[in-house]
Length: 223
Ligand SMILES: *[C@@H]1O[C@H](CO)[C@@H](O)[C@H](O)[C@H]1NC(C)=O
Ligand SMILES: *[C@@H]1O[C@H](CO)[C@@H](O)[C@H](O)[C@H]1NC(C)=O
Ligand SMILES: *[C@@H]1O[C@H](CO)[C@@H](O)[C@H](O)[C@H]1NC(C)=O
Ligand SMILES: *[C@@H]1O[C@H](CO)[C@@H](O)[C@H](O)[C@H]1NC(C)=O
Ligand SMILES: *[C@@H]1O[C@H](CO)[C@@H](O)[C@H](O)[C@H]1NC(C)=O
Ligand SMILES: *[C@@H]1O[C@H](CO)[C@@H](O)[C@H](O)[C@H]1NC(C)=O
Ligand SMILES: *[C@@H]1O[C@H](CO)[C@@H](O)[C@H](O)[C@H]1NC(C)=O
Image 1: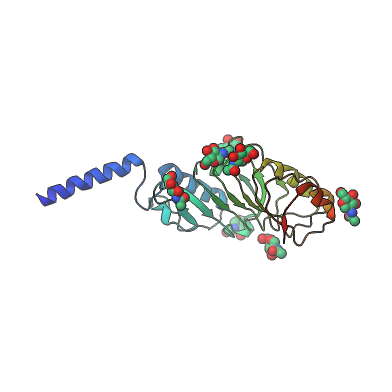
Image 2 (image 1 turned 90 degrees about the vertical axis):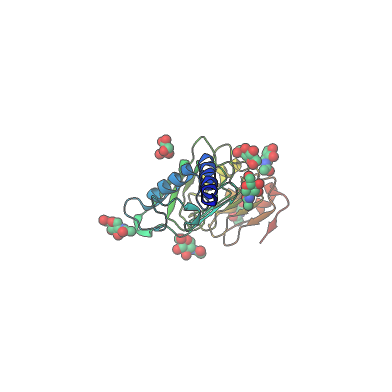
């Protein structure tokens, strides 16, 4: 009798979790699929990164570099810093890879040899922090719909000459409170384009600057 009850309870439990679409320690099936696609893109054509991301393993919330929300089972943090094999050459990242992650708050992709960021019409609306430092990005195109982003870390990402396009596109992030542009060799004349009204923290260290930047930004704490 007790065995039957236990089995009944177990069946109800299994039905409940499969209706939800996720298992304890697992993530949503659509996000698991997206993680494996991301792994393929990151390793294309012959990289060896993220060995713990294994097709067939449902427990993707315990994979390396991932944090899930334990009540929704959705991925909230992807910390993929220095993950990609450098010999694979430049990576032109298509941000549709991240669209399935509807609760993604933190996306950290530093030092992965990202050279460009292809932005799609849909946006990563849940994103609050994006870290692209240590890549050599000469084209960052951002359009509408990134309004929830509050921290953008672009330390050491570009060389002088390609900076103009990058800074113009910062207008797409109206709610930024923290912006790190350190180590980029930006010149003062380019920074005059900044128009970020909510900015509270700005790191411009290790750049070549002149005072004209402060005419457009207002009150910021410069480190
Ligand atoms: C991938 O293959 C290329 C050429 O076949 C090779 O030069 C490179 O080292 C390989 N990269 C990795 C990460 O295995
Ligand atoms: C997890 O998701 C729940 C439900 O959406 C939300 O209330 C909670 O704040 C989230 N927790 C974290 C740490 O994001
Ligand atoms: C980015 O990926 C999406 C979905 O796979 C695709 O439709 C789109 O054409 C890609 N964009 C570029 C510029 O490759
Ligand atoms: C910003 O976040 C709020 C609350 O999480 C959400 O309702 C909204 O759609 C997000 N904005 C965008 C542009 O996705
Ligand atoms: C800038 O990024 C490159 C590539 O990741 C790295 O090799 C270099 O050490 C970084 N420079 C600084 C000053 O952080
Ligand atoms: C972002 O900015 C828009 C317009 O300035 C505002 O309506 C919205 O509430 C802001 N969102 C957040 C999360 O601060
Ligand atoms: C400082 O920036 C202003 C504004 O763009 C520019 O006209 C000027 O040449 C710069 N001065 C120096 C010394 O670089």
